[in-house]
Image (cartoon, rainbow, N blue to C red; front, side, top):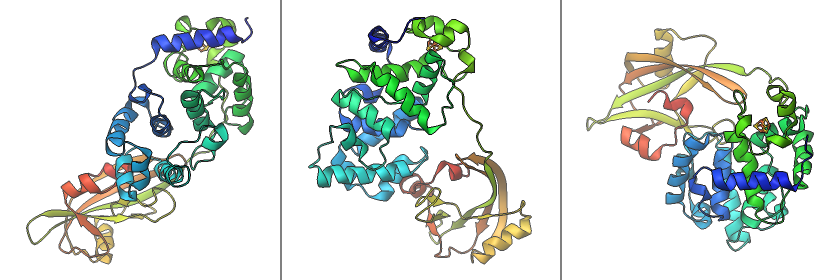
Length: 349
Ligand code: SF4
């Protein structure tokens, strides 16, 4: 088995240049573009990010535009991507870049890492891609690839494992075009050394360096500790519809609290319940909100899974007589254009 050396780096970077996917954020090395794409790509598939990225850049083409945007615009642009703290942190970081750094993105690893919401991985990605810094960016793809190449049985969930793999990679960075090495590792994990199913070792540009391939142990890596089971919360969600004096249908939404899960986003009114509500109980909840329910038009059930919690939701569609001011009453068009409604409630539209 060959030891990792500069030939490994050369083979991987060459493969990346010849095989990389055509992605909108790879058109240039502008730090704002790389930053936005990297934050979007955390927890989200490339194909899903593509449209979000293009829309975001159309609306907010520069870091100054991002810094100047209001929260609801940002949440609306992020609607459906989830993990909304990402956009709040980006907003704060953009304010720092514009307000304290004269609009110039920092060019050192420490400077980039110091911005709100940027961790070691993102700082490594921006640093190596945009500023040619010899700094690794170790995400789940890279952990998988390297744990197979090294036959490293460390738990990839353990804090020290990223550092350990990062220090192996640090030694392998080329003198220039560092971003191609960073992206080569990530791309290899996405296209060849895949997370689900057998890796495509016969297409792998660095197969000759891979211990797992030599020993046929690819599927034993990476080693991952078991996750704790998620907490399950049962919810009764109310889609309250009222026809206003002009004959326009309006729906009740309300803003979620400023902190916690889905902070500051909108939701359909809902309550946590121990068990499914009967129709009478559901009507009683709406009455408590002063809505004067007329009849239930239909119901539906959805499950939404967050990282640590699962919502089992039953939706009650009620036509009501009154539009109490405790809720915001919006038309379909306003919902679509202005209301940042997270995916967990989007099922009920
Ligand atoms: S040889 Fe196979 S297991 Fe090893 S890095 Fe390449 S694709 Fe992954």
